[in-house]
Length: 91
Image (cartoon, rainbow, N blue to C red):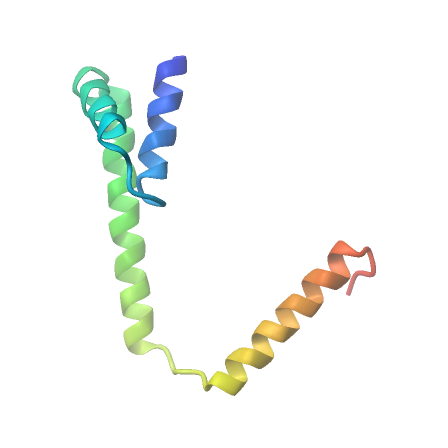
């Protein structure tokens, strides 16, 4: 992968995390116009993003809802487990 392609692929991914600046969007557009592999990569990222959004929407519609109390219990347990593992105490 060329160095410039690496920068573009990073920007393509960043675009799902934050709003890209106008110069960043223009750089992507120009590069994708000339580079088929990066264009394919951008299309694949878009497809993956749409599929994940559909999965989240489906899960939200069909999953049983947890109460706030149950959510808090789960969150506390996850945090306690993470603290034990990072402190080297294990399970």
